[in-house]
Image (cartoon, rainbow, N blue to C red; front, side):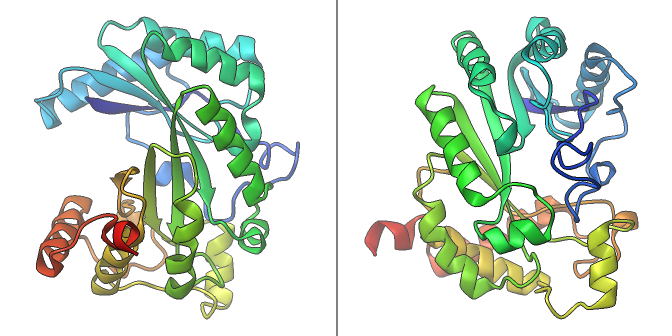
Length: 290
């Protein structure tokens, strides 16, 4: 299965003025959207172009998951959501949908719709949590607290919908010692999958302005220090969570600072696997035997 990224033209409540403006301080969706992924194109057109793109790059794919990634993909009325998802649901090569969103955009009627759909095909709801610390969430303009994410995950899990979450390492005033303690709280979340990204300072964002004014609050990983840290973290992580991504990758032209050069994610993953083998360790090793 291969994910096909879709930009369906959503926005976020911390962008349109409902709870805030300007969005999360680190965010620029163009930094990770594929070139074919544009909201002016229909969902069907993006799917077709994505399938053609991935046929050449991932020839083993036998089916696809429509990944509604950009911004908050449940931030609309239930009627509008059903209309947007219909093209993806009906496409013969689409075997499931993955929905990226915020925890404060998941009203019960929407979750009931996804629960019904999940009886027919694979459905995953992936929420951006980013940090368990409310002070950090306030500073990066998330517009919700950590408990909001906990509540959303509990309601997703209660409906037997696949639940994913996303965390960022490197947000201001946080450090590796904190994150290795945070894992104890993360382990208790009702998750099926999890993603991790190292913070990347993207040009044109509010966080870039903060970083250029004062970089001291930001913990910057070198490649080697991140490999060591993420293996330390994985050792403590609940082994029932499928790690979908260990690190982030954006085109270098978007970066204000580039600590890793032009190394691609597949090389980072190889380095992580090498470190795991070197230590003779695995995800959950310290979780299982602590």
